[in-house]
Image (cartoon, rainbow, N blue to C red):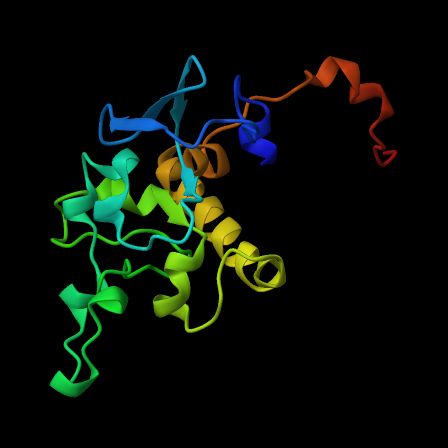
Amino acid sequence: MAKGGRREGAGRKPGMPNKITATLKDAILMAAEAAGGAYRFDFVIAGTGYAADPNLRPEFADFARLILLWRDRFTPPPDEEDPILGAHPYLGPGNEFMEKSPGGAPYLKDIHCFNPAGFVSFGVPIGDVPSMKRGLPSVTAQISRDLFLADFAHHQQRMTGTVPADYGPELYAKAVWRASN
């Protein structure tokens, strides 16, 4: 939140109506219109309630078919099939959506799902108060990692590049100890 908190419009959006229309404007930013305003996001943490199937969420209509679901990844024995569990998203370690076809929707990794839809992926309740201590650090770590890697070339240049001197030697040369001859 520290990096995002400095951005215009960043932070929580309390009082937003339940109906949010979201679209992907490009492969990097998501956009949403709600409560009479338009918003753009680098990362989204989706709190969508108890319906776990992304295909049922109107705000995911543009990309729900691209999200990897449990039924796409795991086929249970016939006597253990459960279409409701199979409709849950197959989430990554930071609660991020995974692509159904690798390379087909790389922006999905920037949408984090911290709600009951994560139950099947992690085997524990997600999104309630007791889960915050356990779950929010992994979501935060994944977002931090992704932000760092997205700007890696910039960080690497800053760490390994030539840094000009802040002050010239004329400001401190007289104060430097020198051995007498």
